[in-house]
Length: 191
Image (cartoon, rainbow, N blue to C red; front, top):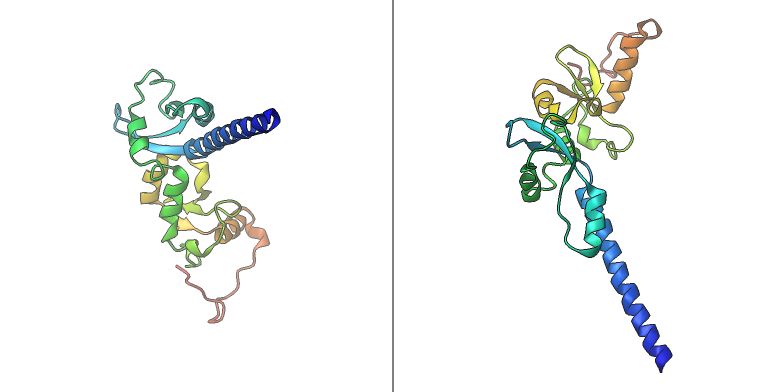
């Protein structure tokens, strides 16, 4: 009888601990990632990161409080009041850089081949698209500072991963590239 009671207590404790661990893990995944916010002090776009590890630790015992671990305005404004956290709380997934980039590229076609970048499956992991700058340089989007992305999206053209690799090779090694005359079977949406 005592043994059965101990088993029930042990199962209850294990279930409670499992619930708390799952809550912590979910909190970590919800708060991780770079985000773009409008800094209340400068009224400029800033790239921030929430301290996801600390939030996950807090979530184990009580509701977590968000705090920043990084900001593109630091160290100059290190002691700010972190009012930008209110913007994150109101629209947590809308300010994630990953989601902003996916949303921008989702309805775009490659400036070179004309193919829809949204058609390229799983590009977020392996084959990330790039941007064609006004100076005609092809640069992967993730090589720019995150806080500059909204401005760059207004100036740059989208380039799919395949064309990014091809055109970069063409520019770096022109002696190894043979340009052929375009024929009707080989013409794609060339601009």
